[in-house]
Figure 1: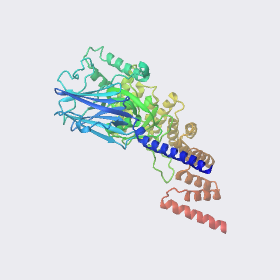
Figure 2: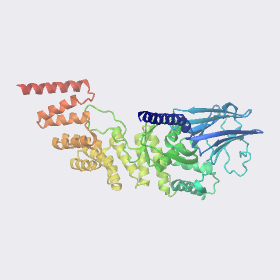
Figure 3: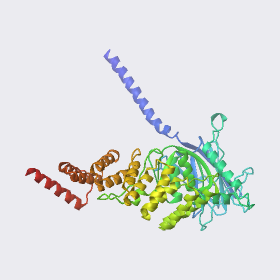
Figure 4: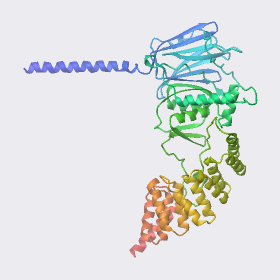
Length: 540
């Protein structure tokens, strides 16, 4: 009996071992099945043209862009796997106008396989996706007709590769391929936001200069329209098909040379085709489609979900200051989207805004303020303009009366603009209009959560006006919403001393000393002396 039982267990163990070994051997093969499997690469040379076809087993996710010196077409394909039968060195037949280099960017997520095609200056290209295959046509760029050989029906000719030494004004990438069909032959639903954008752009172009009778090309009209709306960055054409959104932002980083930081909670893929538009215009479209926001400062763009809050880091100070700080009250840039239904007054106001921003960047604050005022007269319902004027007159020009005026104009348009209420409160306090200042301070802290700079300024105002209890309540509210800082802890200790509550002041100083915050030597020495003095008084 025992012998039979042993044989039974031995059989089970051997079977389990063989199953695990087979699973381990099959795992690498299974891993190879994901992504875009390229089973073959065909290349046909005809006269002075070359057709390269990547034969895939599924629809590829890819991006395209150009590099220069020498001119190169770069195609990045996500999660691409080349069949073992493909010999990279033998893909292209012998020719004198194109060469191919294939590299794997394993550090990217997902992994990227890069096809880099170097072309001579007299050739151009056209890239199409046909079901699961990717077709790359390389052909001579004619002086008047750049259509690819064998592609007579094509209505979108490719642009020639830029010549060496010629300054680049636009990162040209071929127009997007035809939209793929869904399973069962049904067409994919179009994006209504993108359709509306295309329709409005075509409408704007068709209406350009109809009254004047001038002949304006579509490209010139679109360029003028973009520049008038403030989009003057490098022009690009992009074709994103189900590409990870982080890789899109990395492409913008390469094109713009601007630092781009993306919050880790931003996820998803993107399909977007745009032709000859400024890259920052394309970025704004993506942000709108994905419900994202951006903050830009110091050659850096931070991108994060619209539901999140973001604030730039501020340098801490050792003592509270009632005077407004330019870093605290600096408003976001005036980003005004193009609209084909805007009046002549608004269009003129946009021009004044553009010139005002230039003057402000050049530190010509008075000229900038004058231009902002002209813009506001033409566009009186735009609260961003009046709020910008309030900030300039408070911080840049120290004109408190004008600051209060434009802050009031902002509050007429948007009664919940807590930043405008804070500007009015500080300017009123500077003019010793105490009841008016208190009213605006109270309005500035009604947000959820209340503005941190409003709580700090209101507390400093209350302390200066002999209301330490009110100042303490404001600082406690700050701690509840944003946690204590060196400034708030010092202020609380100072207020306890003012109220004669020595024990609470000492406890606050001790908490500050052991808080872990870095303290300047003078402040640390004062706190230790203050604590020692109090302890000696208690012992006596």
